[in-house]
Image (cartoon, rainbow, N blue to C red; front, side):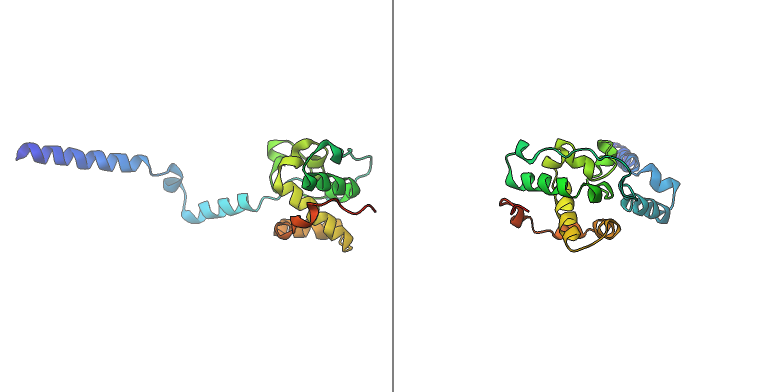
Length: 163
């Protein structure tokens, strides 16, 4: 009987020790309110953008013909038409961190935009808002608010009318 008690006690001690290894250190070093505030600050980080219109030349966007997907072709075609606006927009795929981009325009000056739905939807949202007469700052506020997520990309799967 004593042997069973010793084994049982050892099993309990081992279980407690194992459980303690999974307690995060941050949980013991700061309050949950502090952790929540830190997480919100990270979640609310606005990616890089330029607050003002460019003073000089902007980089060229890649040619739409370089891509086979009609949606991607249209995204690059409209990006070329609204470069000054895209220069002033953040990109919520956070390519500023991973690729060093300084604005949404950089996504379309490279191949990056071709494989990123976030970039494409923000680009199409910006294009639509420009045609509604919105300023770059108003468009940026919409992007930050997540309004770009409601873009109907289906209408961009066909060639756009020439203008």
